[in-house]
Image 1 (cartoon, rainbow, N blue to C red):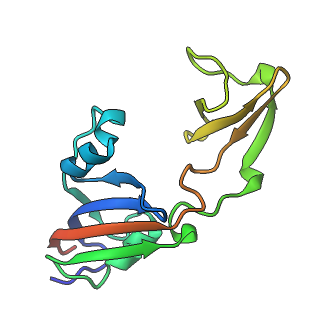
Image 2 (cartoon, helix red, strand yellow):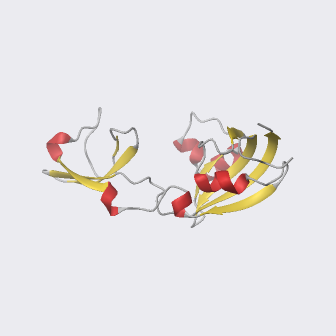
Length: 156
């Protein structure tokens, strides 16, 4: 069955940055091999089901699935603008140190905070007066490569 927008698909996948680093997978064996299961111990690695075109996955993957067939194994490369966006200097902001809080933690470089919009941002500088926070997605600017297997397709 050929995938169309609105179909429900179930896939097995491994996602890598352009340099080959695995940052996400549905496969337990790969998660264990690359150490993801240690950093995400409560996560269940299993096939992923979603609606194509529903905005659940990045745009480039959504569009690349349309026209593929159930049972297909495919390698899909997604450019930064269709993945997590380009890295933008304008998303790095400085704040008065007194105005930045981390629940139960100390403000230090490399720490992560939750932004007002619910996204996670990284503290890239923590001085006595100024705290610099990078609000870019950690994967911004990266080409993303997916190795996928289409397990099933249900028409809309």
